[in-house]
Length: 442
Ligand code: IFM
Image (cartoon, rainbow, N blue to C red):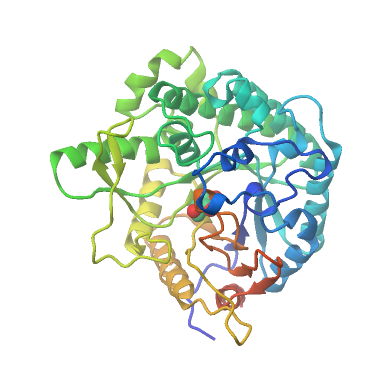
């Protein structure tokens, strides 16, 4: 067995997925389209014209997938509820069959000794709500609160770990300013409105969950990566500073510190009403961090905010999907979050993409992923030794799945999925992760 760093015995080990990326069953049992169903149908938006229509067919194969989790020794599983599956029109008109699916999942997890971590929103807004204005509309915060209440009442007897949103800045920036994600809008004002309304929805969600779920432990998941100017010029430094606000600060700061960062505070003022900032800043119990590697910014006048994505220095190590491997930045991010927000941290996503294949020996050999996970876990342990209060780690992802604009071309799972036959094959990294968990508990 490989050598692993020692972790506290009560450290929690899990894996994460999201509804649209794995469930499939796009039209099963009354589910209606969400904004990603529509986005996938727009020509040229998703590689290869892929969609989440079938994905991993987890909707029909859930028991097999929970058995896989148990075989890895996972203690916790983070999944998201598909809003368009449980409320096909987004509000009113509950779909019992959709709600039942998550009842079965939660029960199966609990029977298998795996704690459910339920995320209310991983980017799949019901299309019907987008047609009414979506996140550009202030009403969306109220629609979200009603949806949160439905889930809290239905699942709160068994689920105690709740997550309001996954990666606020990704779906707002790429959905409303740089059109890499649904709904694919490019408009500064709509982007700012979406930021503020999503923050309001988060606050409303925390309030609803506190009221309706006794003993709830509530967090939100933020993707945070240091933003580095591609080259050190004044223009690139300015681009990096604004991207840093939009990527790293415009959700964490108002939600935890009660204010927007400076450039955004001025721009967003027209949409902020009396009492909003207090509503947004309802206390949470922990900070969810998704982290992969640093990002690089450059000035780009063709983009709506004047910044664009730069490249990592040519000599940087990268993983299979081209992202920079930089474990020191992970350690530093954990320490930054600890010092700035003073909350317990759970790493809710970290992992490595690639184009893994089943070998003639029937196995999936992914040494690149094992290497990445090894050095990132060591960096996390270092951060903990230096004082960061990290309580758990969830690998992204349990299964290869629908990787948004990249379709099925990028595989992040520790379990391989053959998207023709839907057969699951544990990769070498799955065995490595199971060994890590076993060693950490020994
Ligand atoms: O697949 C995504 C996930 O949905 C959100 N965080 C990053 C992952 C890899 O790109």
